[in-house]
Amino acid sequence: MEKVDLLKITIICKKYYKEIKKLEKEFKVTRKGDICIAVGGDGTFVKAAREFNGPILAIRGNESNSSGYYSDVSVKDMELIIKKLKKKQYSVESLGNKIALSYKGKKYYAVNEILLHNWREEVYFSIYYKEDHAEKVVYPYIMAGDGVLVTSEVGSTAYNRSAGGPIILSPRLLCVTFLNADGPYTNSIILSPDKTLGIRIEKYRGIIRYDGIDVGTIHKKEYFEVSLSRKELKVIRLNGMREDTATKLSRIIKGRMRRPEGIEY
Image (cartoon, rainbow, N blue to C red; front, side):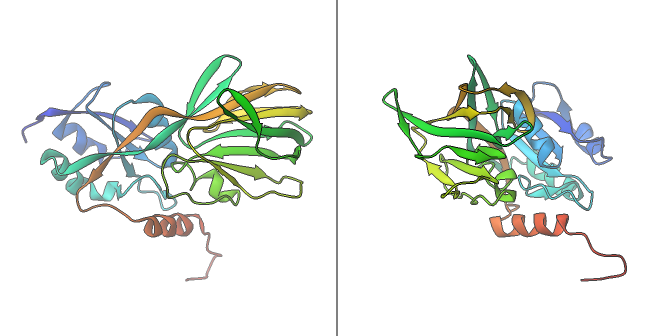
């Protein structure tokens, strides 16, 4: 078959699936493609989002537990995927904005979440937001517990959902979810995108992570700030192959369920 000259692809994969050979046969594979094809699970998609600035097409692997919330298609659909890419039967959409973490003069960008986790003992922290360059208290008490995570619509179905936080269907919001916190109020808090959120350590120490990557240890009186960045996360949507939220969540739940031996559902 004739290669598509106008479409160059970058492939990032969890492992080398045999279906990837079909992509390599039909398209020109390069490190700086027009689009990135992420083959695997959500971890592969997040890795692709860190390494590739353009639009990403997420394709689930063929493992039974490969739920892939960010993907609408799997490697089993490869023939149809190739056909739609060659005929340009797709659109580029913004999934949302990456989350910016500012700590000790450096910036990091997350797809799913920014996390403060306790080091050994529980960590005590306070939270505030900045408005007109002034700090304003979000919550009037010092929180104590395993930590806190900050996410947006993009990552609300990941760690945030598992921690009891809300699934966010509205773009450009920040969500604060407490982890096993001890206090009179432990519900998640939603902030508008124009606010910069700050978290300050009041006692003991914690570990800062973004998308599972360690940034470092944070000590008493130190702080970090979180905001929605201007970096958009763009994805490829194939025409006629879009899954709705209910279908995605159902697939994730089924993919994580384990059946006792000898029992069928």
